[in-house]
Image (tube, rainbow, N blue to C red):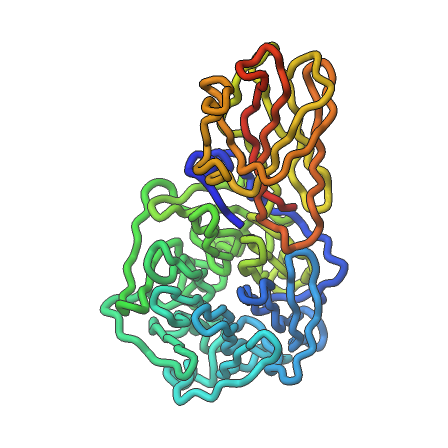
Length: 484
């Protein structure tokens, strides 16, 4: 539930850290690299399939299916499953309520074999889709790995660009493919990004399609492995069959491949994290985080932080509560790999907004003393209340835009209170809490459960005060967003 007025959006944004936080699930997939992940939105969970441990002997390719509900992983047991794979593409088709899986690699002693199959998850089971065309067939290869895929909400198509054709040294031609739930087709845009693999791509509804950043063109100088990496930015529209290169103002992120990229719908920005850079002196895992607002990039590493140790070959996807979930990978290309789960963008947050109206001890003030973390008490400190009061009122609402009195803020002067008194919350419930000497702390129990991630509650305190106009002094408002 995300109900805002403009000033509260700005207030919450200014207080938000959106930090990376390590989750501690009771269950998790085994350590691995490059599983396929996507948010299955109708089920409110992130789906994970496969991955590999190429550092083991023999190398292992996984074919298991897991769901992340925002708090814990659970292994699913579908009647039918795709062959195991890693470095494939997976996206959620919002129009058809299907998670689409394509291609990828199967680890062998001598490298990898390529897959060219398309599968869909309907929320309970996997089924293979037999298409007239396949991406591998369209480009003349047994299959594709290291592809970039995203769903174009506006164009209503799964978009695939780039990939690997042979053992990490031959990138796919610069062709764009679309999948509509029945078949793969090659489009014919007038211009395209240069050929590449491991580009970062995500849905970009504010930009009219999907957003692509960076990637690598194997077997080209100057990198130690013959790589070129990019930091260019492109938008593809399935509706218009056009690629458009963007030219952000200001500083640009360093060039990289294999980074995560997602659209943060709550903040209305695109968040990019990690990946690796390839230079003449070595290949370096990155741990920085950047946001793109449609015009410019901003390095937010100092406030967002980063998962412990830079990693490569991890998987990331949208998660319940508007978060990003990050799993697996390692600090080196061939392991050892981790089974850690990190989340970003669903940190518990709070902020003050609005203003109170005075009583005998000044203007009451309400402020959070911690954050509304799931399963804990959210503490709100009230001050400047009537020193003679032993009890105060806390109004609790689930909206800060509307109430039984109409739109918020609502003037309380018509009810006999001071001219500067306003109601800042929908006041769906009111509770008493103890105060002494003009101060007191109210404890709000934040529920446990991933279903409450991102839920917002608004608070306002008041006390009976003989020195206040109308006999009641009220505080400013406080907004809290449940998270980790």
